[in-house]
Length: 453
Image (cartoon, rainbow, N blue to C red):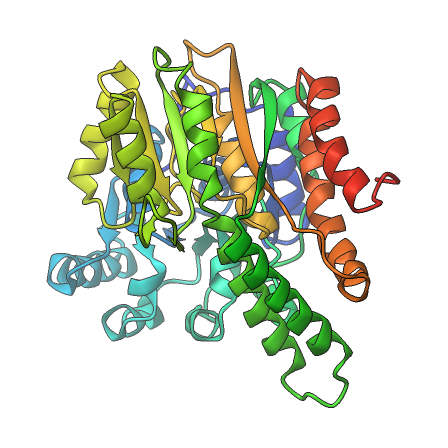
C-alpha cells in the first residue's frame, strides 16, 4: 500500500539494531536510544515505526529534528521505507493546509498513513501547536538529536497526548544541565539497551578504523594572561558558597574560557605546518570554532575565515565553507563537489556536529576541540562513517596546552582537565596507532600530574 512503512529489501538490520527495536517494545513503547554517531539510529527508528504499523496499525509518524538539513536527510531515509513525508518547516504557508487536510483524511479513514518531519523551531510555533490536538492516538513521536529538546521552551511544547515516544542521540545528556536531561528522559523514556559506544560501533563494522594524531598547541602571551584571569575567577566562584547563582557564574566563565581555547591563534600556524605537506590530499574536513582571534596576521577574524584564507589563498588548497548560513541547495552542491574531489576540503562550524551525513570524509582537522562531550562524540563519529572508497579515517586533533599557572589554581585546573583528557585518551586508545597517539598526550599528562589516567 502506498505511503505506509515497510522495511526495504536493501536494508539488513545489524544485531544491535534488532535488539534496540526489541528493547523499545519491551519498554512499553517508550525509550531513548543512545547509539554512537553514524551507527544507524535513523534506520533503527524507521524499523520501529514499521513494526508498530504491522502490530497496531500505526497511523502517524512525527519526527522532530533540530535543523532544516536534517529534515531533508530524514526525508531521504523515510522514502526508502516507502513513506511520503510531509516536510513541515520554514514558511507556514508551505505545509499548514496540507497537514490539516492529511490529519482529517487519517481521522476519516481516507488515508492509511501520514509521515510528518519538522524542526524544533516549527514545533514551538503557533501554527504547529494548534494542529497537535488532531494527531491520533496511534502516533509515534521521534525526537532526533533529542538532547536539544531539553530546554524549557521546547520541552513544554512536546505533545502530551502522544504516548508512543522515541528519543535518539549519541549523547542524550545535556552539558551543564541536569534538569534538562531529566526532563528529556521523563518525556521520552529511559536509555535503552544496548547502548552502542564508539568502540562497539567500530568493532561491529558500523564505523571505520582510524589513525589519531593529537597536535599540541601553546597559547600566546596575551591569551595566557586572559586564560589565567578566567581560571582564577573560576576558582573563586567554586569556593564562593554564598553565591546563589554559583552554577550560572561558573558556566559562563567556563564558556568564555572554552571560547578562548577554541580560537587560540597558534592553531593557524599549526595548521600551516600540517597542511603544507598534505596539499595533494582530498576529502578533508576542517572543524572550526565560532570565536574570534586576535593576532597581528589575522586581526580579529573568525577562525573560519582565517582557515579559508590560509588554505585557499596561501596554500592553493581547494576549499569552501559549510555553515548554518549555507542555503540547503548550496549544501547539496558542496556535498557533491566534495565527494567527487572537485573540492579538496570543507571548512565547517557547528552545523556538521549533528546528524549531517557526509560519509566521504576521509581526513579531518579539528581546530576547535570542544569541552562539551556531546560535540566531541558527534564530531568524531561523523568522520568515521563508512564509505565505499574509505578504508580508514585520519584525524588530527588540536589540543591547547593550558599555561603553567600558580599553585592555587593548579588543583582547579587539574580537575577540569581530568574529564577532558579522559576523552582524548579514550579516543587515542581506540585508534590503530594508539601507542603513538598516547605518547603525544603523555606531555599533557606529565605537565598536570595526571599520569594515573
